[in-house]
Amino acid sequence: MSERPPGVPSDIADAGLASAGLARIGWAQRSMPVLTGIGQVFVAEKPLAGRTIAACLHVTAETAVLVQALRAGGAEVYLAASNPLSTQDDIAAALDACGAAVVFARAGADRAAYEEHIHRALDAGPDLVVDDGGDLMEALHAERPDLLGKVMGGCESTTAGVIRLRRMASEGTLAFPAVAADATGTRLMLDSMYGTGQSTIDGILRATNIMLAGRTVVVAGYGWCGRGIAQRARGLGAQVIVTEVDPVRALDALMQGYRVLPMADAAPLGEVFITATGSREVITAPHLAAMRDGAILANAGHFDVEVDVRALAGLAVSVEVGVRPHTDEYVLADGRRLLLLAEGRIVNLVAAEGNPAMVMDVSFAGQALVLAWLAREHGSLLPGVHRVPVAIDDEIARLALGATGVAIDELTPAQQEYLDSWQQP
Image 1 (tube, rainbow, N blue to C red):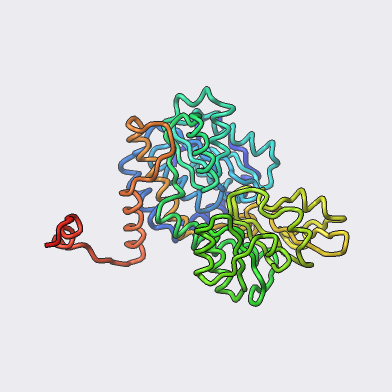
Image 2 (cartoon, rainbow, N blue to C red):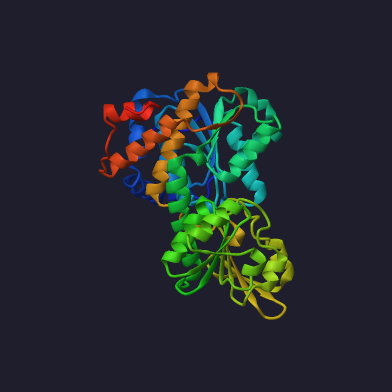
Protein backbone atom coordinates (compact mmCIF):
# COMPACT_ATOMS: atom_id res chain seq x y z
CA MET A 1 0.00 0.00 0.00
CA SER A 2 1.40 3.40 -0.91
CA GLU A 3 2.06 6.13 1.59
CA ARG A 4 -0.44 8.90 2.25
CA PRO A 5 -0.03 12.13 0.26
CA PRO A 6 2.94 14.10 1.57
CA GLY A 7 2.21 16.99 3.88
CA VAL A 8 -1.29 15.80 4.82
CA PRO A 9 -1.20 14.42 8.37
CA SER A 10 -3.96 12.33 9.83
CA ASP A 11 -5.66 13.34 13.07
CA ILE A 12 -5.99 10.18 15.15
CA ALA A 13 -5.93 9.44 18.85
CA ASP A 14 -3.06 6.96 19.21
CA ALA A 15 -0.80 5.65 16.45
CA GLY A 16 0.34 2.92 18.83
CA LEU A 17 -2.99 1.15 18.38
CA ALA A 18 -2.26 0.31 14.74
CA SER A 19 -1.21 -3.29 15.35
CA ALA A 20 -4.43 -4.12 17.20
CA GLY A 21 -6.43 -2.37 14.48
CA LEU A 22 -4.78 -4.32 11.69
CA ALA A 23 -5.61 -7.58 13.45
CA ARG A 24 -9.28 -6.57 13.73
CA ILE A 25 -9.39 -5.55 10.07
CA GLY A 26 -8.00 -8.95 9.15
CA TRP A 27 -10.72 -10.62 11.21
CA ALA A 28 -13.41 -8.58 9.45
CA GLN A 29 -11.99 -9.47 6.04
CA ARG A 30 -12.61 -13.17 6.71
CA SER A 31 -16.35 -12.44 6.78
CA MET A 32 -16.28 -10.04 3.82
CA PRO A 33 -15.48 -12.19 0.77
CA VAL A 34 -17.60 -10.16 -1.66
CA LEU A 35 -15.87 -6.85 -0.96
CA THR A 36 -12.47 -8.53 -0.76
CA GLY A 37 -13.09 -10.08 -4.18
CA ILE A 38 -14.11 -6.72 -5.61
CA GLY A 39 -10.89 -5.27 -4.20
CA GLN A 40 -8.89 -7.91 -6.04
CA VAL A 41 -10.65 -7.00 -9.30
CA PHE A 42 -9.98 -3.32 -8.57
CA VAL A 43 -6.26 -4.03 -8.26
CA ALA A 44 -6.18 -5.18 -11.88
CA GLU A 45 -8.70 -2.76 -13.41
CA LYS A 46 -7.98 0.43 -11.38
CA PRO A 47 -11.44 1.96 -11.97
CA LEU A 48 -10.70 4.80 -9.54
CA ALA A 49 -7.19 5.65 -10.74
CA GLY A 50 -6.39 9.30 -10.18
CA ARG A 51 -9.60 9.95 -8.25
CA THR A 52 -9.74 11.59 -4.84
CA ILE A 53 -12.50 10.38 -2.52
CA ALA A 54 -13.70 12.25 0.57
CA ALA A 55 -15.62 9.92 2.88
CA CYS A 56 -17.59 10.53 6.06
CA LEU A 57 -18.28 7.09 7.52
CA HIS A 58 -18.30 5.18 10.79
CA VAL A 59 -14.66 4.32 11.37
CA THR A 60 -14.92 0.59 12.01
CA ALA A 61 -13.09 -2.53 10.90
CA GLU A 62 -15.68 -3.14 8.18
CA THR A 63 -15.29 0.41 6.86
CA ALA A 64 -11.55 -0.21 6.72
CA VAL A 65 -12.09 -3.09 4.31
CA LEU A 66 -14.07 -0.75 2.05
CA VAL A 67 -11.34 1.88 2.23
CA GLN A 68 -8.72 -0.69 1.29
CA ALA A 69 -10.79 -1.76 -1.73
CA LEU A 70 -11.12 1.86 -2.89
CA ARG A 71 -7.39 2.36 -2.43
CA ALA A 72 -6.76 -0.83 -4.41
CA GLY A 73 -8.86 0.69 -7.19
CA GLY A 74 -6.44 3.60 -7.43
CA ALA A 75 -8.20 6.22 -5.30
CA GLU A 76 -6.73 8.53 -2.69
CA VAL A 77 -9.10 8.33 0.28
CA TYR A 78 -9.62 11.00 2.95
CA LEU A 79 -11.76 9.63 5.77
CA ALA A 80 -13.64 11.55 8.45
CA ALA A 81 -15.88 10.01 11.10
CA SER A 82 -19.64 10.21 10.71
CA ASN A 83 -20.14 9.78 14.46
CA PRO A 84 -17.42 10.39 17.07
CA LEU A 85 -18.89 7.81 19.45
CA SER A 86 -18.69 5.07 16.85
CA THR A 87 -15.05 5.72 15.96
CA GLN A 88 -12.71 2.85 16.77
CA ASP A 89 -9.34 4.45 17.46
CA ASP A 90 -7.37 1.30 16.67
CA ILE A 91 -8.93 1.14 13.20
CA ALA A 92 -8.14 4.80 12.56
CA ALA A 93 -4.54 4.13 13.56
CA ALA A 94 -4.33 1.04 11.35
CA LEU A 95 -5.62 2.85 8.25
CA ASP A 96 -3.14 5.64 8.88
CA ALA A 97 -0.24 3.24 9.42
CA CYS A 98 -0.79 1.22 6.25
CA GLY A 99 -1.39 4.28 4.09
CA ALA A 100 -4.87 3.22 3.00
CA ALA A 101 -6.32 6.62 3.88
CA VAL A 102 -5.67 9.96 5.48
CA VAL A 103 -7.86 9.69 8.58
CA PHE A 104 -9.49 12.45 10.60
CA ALA A 105 -11.26 10.64 13.43
CA ARG A 106 -11.01 10.39 17.20
CA ALA A 107 -13.40 8.57 19.49
CA GLY A 108 -15.39 11.04 21.58
CA ALA A 109 -14.42 14.12 19.55
CA ASP A 110 -16.58 17.14 20.35
CA ARG A 111 -18.83 18.84 17.80
CA ALA A 112 -16.18 21.39 16.76
CA ALA A 113 -13.57 18.68 16.12
CA TYR A 114 -16.14 16.54 14.30
CA GLU A 115 -16.96 19.37 11.90
CA GLU A 116 -13.28 20.26 11.47
CA HIS A 117 -12.53 16.68 10.47
CA ILE A 118 -15.19 16.79 7.75
CA HIS A 119 -13.69 19.98 6.36
CA ARG A 120 -10.20 18.51 6.43
CA ALA A 121 -11.45 15.61 4.33
CA LEU A 122 -13.01 18.11 1.92
CA ASP A 123 -9.74 20.07 1.77
CA ALA A 124 -8.48 17.31 -0.52
CA GLY A 125 -10.72 18.62 -3.31
CA PRO A 126 -12.63 15.37 -3.94
CA ASP A 127 -13.75 13.95 -7.26
CA LEU A 128 -16.17 11.61 -5.45
CA VAL A 129 -17.79 11.73 -2.04
CA VAL A 130 -19.20 9.01 0.23
CA ASP A 131 -21.47 10.02 3.11
CA ASP A 132 -23.29 8.39 6.00
CA GLY A 133 -25.99 10.71 7.26
CA GLY A 134 -25.51 13.72 4.99
CA ASP A 135 -23.24 15.94 7.08
CA LEU A 136 -20.43 15.89 4.51
CA MET A 137 -22.87 16.65 1.69
CA GLU A 138 -24.32 19.55 3.67
CA ALA A 139 -20.91 20.99 4.52
CA LEU A 140 -19.82 20.67 0.90
CA HIS A 141 -22.84 22.52 -0.50
CA ALA A 142 -23.39 25.08 2.28
CA GLU A 143 -19.82 25.93 3.28
CA ARG A 144 -17.49 24.74 0.49
CA PRO A 145 -19.29 25.56 -2.76
CA ASP A 146 -15.93 26.35 -4.38
CA LEU A 147 -15.28 22.59 -4.46
CA LEU A 148 -18.52 21.58 -6.15
CA GLY A 149 -17.30 22.05 -9.70
CA LYS A 150 -14.83 19.19 -9.37
CA VAL A 151 -17.17 16.64 -7.78
CA MET A 152 -18.34 13.99 -10.26
CA GLY A 153 -20.82 12.38 -7.90
CA GLY A 154 -21.34 10.73 -4.58
CA CYS A 155 -23.30 8.15 -2.67
CA GLU A 156 -25.22 8.19 0.60
CA SER A 157 -25.67 5.09 2.71
CA THR A 158 -28.46 6.01 5.15
CA THR A 159 -32.17 6.71 4.84
CA ALA A 160 -31.75 9.89 6.90
CA GLY A 161 -29.04 11.13 4.54
CA VAL A 162 -31.06 10.32 1.42
CA ILE A 163 -34.00 12.30 2.83
CA ARG A 164 -31.69 15.30 3.10
CA LEU A 165 -30.41 14.77 -0.45
CA ARG A 166 -33.94 14.61 -1.85
CA ARG A 167 -34.77 17.88 -0.15
CA MET A 168 -31.65 19.44 -1.66
CA ALA A 169 -32.59 18.09 -5.09
CA SER A 170 -36.15 19.41 -4.82
CA GLU A 171 -34.76 22.87 -4.04
CA GLY A 172 -32.30 22.69 -6.93
CA THR A 173 -29.35 22.77 -4.53
CA LEU A 174 -27.81 19.35 -5.18
CA ALA A 175 -24.97 20.05 -7.58
CA PHE A 176 -24.06 16.57 -8.80
CA PRO A 177 -25.50 13.06 -9.21
CA ALA A 178 -25.83 11.30 -5.85
CA VAL A 179 -26.73 7.64 -5.54
CA ALA A 180 -29.10 6.46 -2.81
CA ALA A 181 -27.07 3.43 -1.78
CA ASP A 182 -29.47 2.71 1.08
CA ALA A 183 -32.41 1.70 -1.08
CA THR A 184 -31.32 -1.45 -2.90
CA GLY A 185 -33.05 -4.74 -2.25
CA THR A 186 -29.93 -6.32 -0.81
CA ARG A 187 -29.17 -3.34 1.43
CA LEU A 188 -32.68 -2.95 2.83
CA MET A 189 -32.94 -6.65 3.59
CA LEU A 190 -29.47 -7.47 4.90
CA ASP A 191 -28.26 -4.17 6.34
CA SER A 192 -31.40 -2.43 7.56
CA MET A 193 -33.57 -5.34 8.64
CA TYR A 194 -31.28 -8.22 9.60
CA GLY A 195 -28.15 -6.24 10.44
CA THR A 196 -29.64 -3.32 12.33
CA GLY A 197 -32.19 -5.60 13.97
CA GLN A 198 -29.46 -7.76 15.46
CA SER A 199 -26.90 -5.07 16.26
CA THR A 200 -29.41 -2.75 17.95
CA ILE A 201 -30.49 -5.49 20.34
CA ASP A 202 -26.80 -6.34 20.82
CA GLY A 203 -26.05 -2.74 21.82
CA ILE A 204 -28.93 -2.63 24.31
CA LEU A 205 -27.90 -5.92 25.92
CA ARG A 206 -24.24 -4.90 26.17
CA ALA A 207 -25.18 -1.57 27.78
CA THR A 208 -27.71 -2.96 30.25
CA ASN A 209 -27.27 -6.75 30.58
CA ILE A 210 -31.05 -7.08 30.89
CA MET A 211 -33.18 -10.04 29.86
CA LEU A 212 -35.67 -9.12 27.15
CA ALA A 213 -37.88 -12.17 27.61
CA GLY A 214 -41.17 -11.11 29.16
CA ARG A 215 -40.46 -7.39 28.89
CA THR A 216 -42.54 -4.93 26.90
CA VAL A 217 -40.46 -3.37 24.11
CA VAL A 218 -41.78 -0.36 22.21
CA VAL A 219 -40.35 0.04 18.71
CA ALA A 220 -40.96 3.47 17.19
CA GLY A 221 -41.04 3.20 13.41
CA TYR A 222 -41.78 0.12 11.33
CA GLY A 223 -39.58 0.70 8.33
CA TRP A 224 -36.92 -1.84 7.42
CA CYS A 225 -34.86 -1.14 10.56
CA GLY A 226 -37.90 -1.16 12.83
CA ARG A 227 -39.08 -4.44 11.35
CA GLY A 228 -35.75 -6.06 12.08
CA ILE A 229 -35.63 -4.71 15.64
CA ALA A 230 -39.19 -5.82 16.38
CA GLN A 231 -38.49 -9.24 14.92
CA ARG A 232 -35.34 -9.75 16.99
CA ALA A 233 -36.97 -8.48 20.20
CA ARG A 234 -39.92 -10.83 19.75
CA GLY A 235 -37.52 -13.68 19.00
CA LEU A 236 -35.97 -13.14 22.43
CA GLY A 237 -39.35 -13.37 24.10
CA ALA A 238 -40.33 -9.72 24.40
CA GLN A 239 -43.85 -8.40 24.02
CA VAL A 240 -43.52 -5.84 21.22
CA ILE A 241 -45.55 -2.67 20.68
CA VAL A 242 -45.05 -0.72 17.46
CA THR A 243 -45.72 3.00 17.01
CA GLU A 244 -46.05 4.48 13.52
CA VAL A 245 -47.27 7.50 11.55
CA ASP A 246 -47.57 5.64 8.24
CA PRO A 247 -50.89 3.77 7.98
CA VAL A 248 -49.56 1.13 5.58
CA ARG A 249 -46.62 0.30 7.82
CA ALA A 250 -48.86 0.30 10.87
CA LEU A 251 -51.19 -2.16 9.12
CA ASP A 252 -48.19 -4.32 8.21
CA ALA A 253 -47.10 -4.39 11.87
CA LEU A 254 -50.60 -5.31 12.95
CA MET A 255 -50.76 -8.16 10.42
CA GLN A 256 -47.41 -9.41 11.73
CA GLY A 257 -48.99 -9.78 15.14
CA TYR A 258 -47.63 -6.71 16.92
CA ARG A 259 -49.72 -4.41 19.06
CA VAL A 260 -49.91 -0.97 17.39
CA LEU A 261 -50.43 2.12 19.53
CA PRO A 262 -49.71 5.85 19.52
CA MET A 263 -46.60 6.70 21.53
CA ALA A 264 -48.73 8.49 24.13
CA ASP A 265 -50.54 5.21 24.86
CA ALA A 266 -47.38 3.09 24.67
CA ALA A 267 -45.33 5.31 26.99
CA PRO A 268 -46.80 4.04 30.29
CA LEU A 269 -46.65 0.41 29.10
CA GLY A 270 -43.12 0.08 27.76
CA GLU A 271 -40.04 -1.07 29.61
CA VAL A 272 -37.61 -0.65 26.69
CA PHE A 273 -38.10 2.02 24.02
CA ILE A 274 -36.22 1.87 20.71
CA THR A 275 -36.58 4.65 18.13
CA ALA A 276 -35.93 3.87 14.46
CA THR A 277 -37.86 6.48 12.50
CA GLY A 278 -35.32 8.82 10.91
CA SER A 279 -37.38 11.72 12.28
CA ARG A 280 -37.01 13.93 15.35
CA GLU A 281 -38.73 14.31 18.75
CA VAL A 282 -40.35 10.89 18.57
CA ILE A 283 -40.15 10.57 22.35
CA THR A 284 -40.85 13.92 24.02
CA ALA A 285 -41.45 15.35 27.50
CA PRO A 286 -45.08 14.15 27.87
CA HIS A 287 -44.02 10.62 26.90
CA LEU A 288 -41.08 10.68 29.31
CA ALA A 289 -43.29 11.94 32.14
CA ALA A 290 -45.61 8.96 31.67
CA MET A 291 -42.94 6.23 31.65
CA ARG A 292 -42.51 3.71 34.42
CA ASP A 293 -39.52 3.56 36.75
CA GLY A 294 -36.49 1.98 35.11
CA ALA A 295 -37.60 2.47 31.51
CA ILE A 296 -34.74 2.18 29.05
CA LEU A 297 -34.39 4.60 26.11
CA ALA A 298 -32.36 3.63 23.04
CA ASN A 299 -32.08 5.13 19.57
CA ALA A 300 -31.31 3.20 16.39
CA GLY A 301 -31.71 6.17 14.05
CA HIS A 302 -28.68 7.93 12.60
CA PHE A 303 -29.05 11.26 14.43
CA ASP A 304 -29.45 11.89 18.16
CA VAL A 305 -32.74 13.75 17.77
CA GLU A 306 -35.33 10.98 18.07
CA VAL A 307 -35.32 10.99 21.86
CA ASP A 308 -35.66 14.55 23.20
CA VAL A 309 -32.62 14.45 25.46
CA ARG A 310 -32.97 18.12 26.43
CA ALA A 311 -36.51 17.47 27.64
CA LEU A 312 -35.24 14.48 29.60
CA ALA A 313 -32.57 16.60 31.23
CA GLY A 314 -35.18 19.25 32.02
CA LEU A 315 -37.36 16.70 33.83
CA ALA A 316 -34.48 15.26 35.84
CA VAL A 317 -33.43 16.46 39.28
CA SER A 318 -30.15 14.56 39.00
CA VAL A 319 -28.17 12.61 36.42
CA GLU A 320 -25.73 9.82 37.13
CA VAL A 321 -23.51 9.43 34.10
CA GLY A 322 -22.13 6.00 33.39
CA VAL A 323 -24.05 3.79 35.82
CA ARG A 324 -22.96 1.22 33.28
CA PRO A 325 -20.90 1.78 30.12
CA HIS A 326 -22.98 3.89 27.73
CA THR A 327 -25.84 4.08 30.24
CA ASP A 328 -26.85 7.30 32.02
CA GLU A 329 -29.51 7.39 34.75
CA TYR A 330 -31.90 10.36 34.89
CA VAL A 331 -33.73 10.67 38.22
CA LEU A 332 -37.06 12.50 38.08
CA ALA A 333 -38.64 14.55 40.87
CA ASP A 334 -40.90 11.69 41.97
CA GLY A 335 -37.97 9.28 42.21
CA ARG A 336 -38.54 7.45 38.93
CA ARG A 337 -35.38 6.64 36.98
CA LEU A 338 -35.11 6.67 33.20
CA LEU A 339 -32.03 5.10 31.60
CA LEU A 340 -30.67 6.70 28.42
CA LEU A 341 -28.31 4.61 26.33
CA ALA A 342 -25.45 6.00 24.22
CA GLU A 343 -26.45 9.61 24.97
CA GLY A 344 -29.37 9.12 22.59
CA ARG A 345 -27.01 8.40 19.70
CA ILE A 346 -27.10 5.33 17.46
CA VAL A 347 -26.92 2.57 20.02
CA ASN A 348 -25.70 -0.28 17.81
CA LEU A 349 -22.50 1.57 16.93
CA VAL A 350 -21.89 3.28 20.28
CA ALA A 351 -22.64 0.47 22.71
CA ALA A 352 -21.82 -2.38 20.32
CA GLU A 353 -19.81 -2.78 17.10
CA GLY A 354 -22.46 -2.06 14.49
CA ASN A 355 -23.72 -4.54 11.96
CA PRO A 356 -21.87 -7.84 11.55
CA ALA A 357 -19.11 -7.95 8.96
CA MET A 358 -21.12 -10.33 6.76
CA VAL A 359 -23.84 -7.68 6.49
CA MET A 360 -21.47 -4.82 5.80
CA ASP A 361 -19.74 -6.95 3.16
CA VAL A 362 -22.81 -6.65 0.95
CA SER A 363 -23.52 -2.99 1.80
CA PHE A 364 -19.97 -1.81 1.20
CA ALA A 365 -19.60 -3.94 -1.92
CA GLY A 366 -22.48 -1.94 -3.34
CA GLN A 367 -20.82 1.35 -2.47
CA ALA A 368 -17.51 0.29 -4.04
CA LEU A 369 -19.21 -0.69 -7.29
CA VAL A 370 -21.35 2.48 -7.29
CA LEU A 371 -18.28 4.68 -6.93
CA ALA A 372 -16.58 2.88 -9.82
CA TRP A 373 -19.78 3.31 -11.86
CA LEU A 374 -19.96 7.03 -11.04
CA ALA A 375 -16.33 7.50 -12.02
CA ARG A 376 -17.14 5.92 -15.38
CA GLU A 377 -20.65 7.22 -16.09
CA HIS A 378 -20.83 10.60 -14.36
CA GLY A 379 -20.80 12.49 -17.65
CA SER A 380 -24.15 10.99 -18.65
CA LEU A 381 -25.88 11.66 -15.29
CA LEU A 382 -27.76 14.80 -14.29
CA PRO A 383 -27.56 16.32 -10.81
CA GLY A 384 -30.09 14.71 -8.52
CA VAL A 385 -30.72 11.55 -6.50
CA HIS A 386 -30.25 8.34 -8.49
CA ARG A 387 -31.05 4.72 -7.69
CA VAL A 388 -28.35 2.07 -7.66
CA PRO A 389 -28.39 0.42 -11.09
CA VAL A 390 -30.31 -2.86 -10.97
CA ALA A 391 -27.38 -4.67 -12.57
CA ILE A 392 -25.13 -3.70 -9.65
CA ASP A 393 -27.63 -4.87 -7.04
CA ASP A 394 -28.15 -8.18 -8.86
CA GLU A 395 -24.40 -8.69 -9.18
CA ILE A 396 -23.89 -8.12 -5.45
CA ALA A 397 -26.60 -10.65 -4.60
CA ARG A 398 -25.03 -13.20 -6.96
CA LEU A 399 -21.59 -12.64 -5.47
CA ALA A 400 -22.98 -12.97 -1.93
CA LEU A 401 -24.73 -16.23 -2.76
CA GLY A 402 -21.61 -17.56 -4.46
CA ALA A 403 -19.49 -16.68 -1.45
CA THR A 404 -21.75 -18.79 0.76
CA GLY A 405 -21.81 -21.69 -1.68
CA VAL A 406 -25.50 -21.27 -2.57
CA ALA A 407 -26.66 -22.01 -6.12
CA ILE A 408 -30.01 -20.98 -7.61
CA ASP A 409 -32.00 -21.89 -10.69
CA GLU A 410 -31.85 -20.00 -13.95
CA LEU A 411 -34.72 -19.35 -16.34
CA THR A 412 -34.83 -21.64 -19.34
CA PRO A 413 -35.14 -19.98 -22.77
CA ALA A 414 -38.77 -21.12 -22.89
CA GLN A 415 -39.50 -19.59 -19.50
CA GLN A 416 -37.86 -16.33 -20.47
CA GLU A 417 -39.84 -16.21 -23.72
CA TYR A 418 -43.06 -16.86 -21.79
CA LEU A 419 -42.35 -14.06 -19.31
CA ASP A 420 -41.39 -11.62 -22.07
CA SER A 421 -44.58 -12.16 -24.07
CA TRP A 422 -48.08 -10.86 -23.38
CA GLN A 423 -49.62 -13.60 -25.51
CA GLN A 424 -50.29 -17.05 -24.11
CA PRO A 425 -48.47 -19.74 -26.13
